[in-house]
Length: 200
Image (cartoon, rainbow, N blue to C red):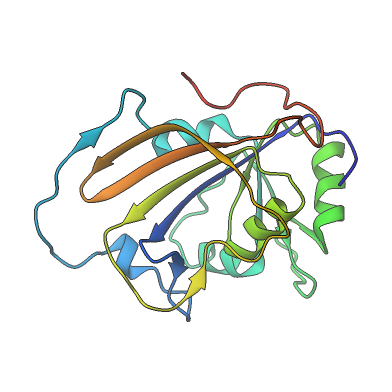
């Protein structure tokens, strides 16, 4: 991607400690309904990671893959009211007025530019991976769950170069270790985001 962008790409996601965001069938019961376990320590750094209640209101656009979209459709309520939602899929056909389907990364980036996106929440393993490979992620927040599930859909995938991360916040509660990283660049590859998305 060589086109200058003015939006900030942000990831906010839960993962098992061995790096999976769901079981092979898409189930996330280990995250949403964990088995009873030991008591965990609560540990905070000098900068605590922003939780969902502060992160979500700060974004105006979401980009997700078909798998994530279809998982969201199983929820009781649509959780993204008031947000522009793009679903990246080469095969999805839907008349759901709440989403815009884009066929590839270039089309998604064009839609974000056309709709004056500012803070973009990037969700779903393959979508996160494609945005990372294109240097379109500026911030990564991960909640690491204290469980090993052995197999599933990986959070990260192959890269053609190392991606250096700057730790900006970390804390632990209920056994979850929350970390926020800024993607470090010696020189921004696609333009400087319009506004800082990490409050500190």
